Length: 153
Image (tube, rainbow, N blue to C red):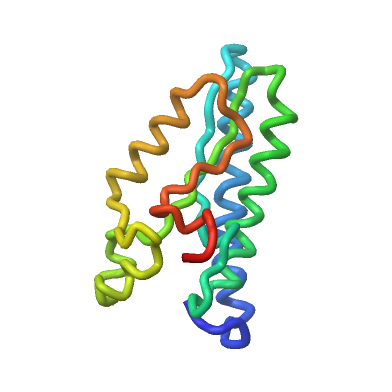
């Protein structure tokens, strides 16, 4: 993450390539397969809690363009493929204990959640499994962020 004005065209292309193009092309293949099988299905993508609720001092505006795009497309796809029983959802993590934050002070990271906690990779995986198995949920963004999406704390 860096300030808005520090992002280069190459930075932006890399984010779009990974977060949007990666989602589009893999999801197209998955949907085509699900349609041919005629038994529905579930697609869960990974978004980010910051896409819906920015935090002052966390400079992630450019990456959140792509994550917010995922939130928008999954809602559209949920409606587009509802009659075929193909569901689209997202998990939106807050801070996750991962190599991405290996150099960040844990105490500082805990301030980004009202619960003062950091999610584990297992927390995110459990949320993905839940959405995959929850047959009546589609078009949903499930925040796994210790309540950060709820508002100011």
